[in-house]
Length: 73
Image 1: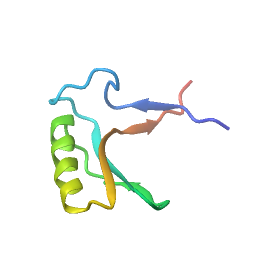
Image 2: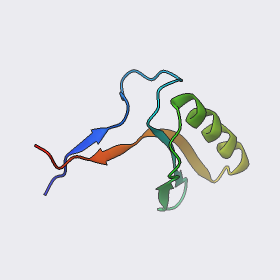
Image 3: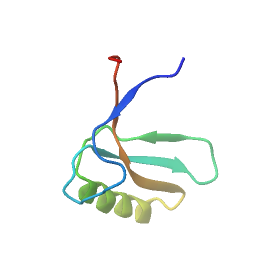
């Protein structure tokens, strides 16, 4: 069964002041992936993702839109 989700931010227009983003990551040569639970702005998330990328080169980090389940149709 497919779910319905509502994005906390606009995924097409990304302003650095937009809220509703978190940092996601995955291993470059493995199958693990996850995300951090802290909500932040797009600008903060991209800056922190670049810092984490420099510290951990075996992983890839990016700013991800937080999706909330929407059970109303």
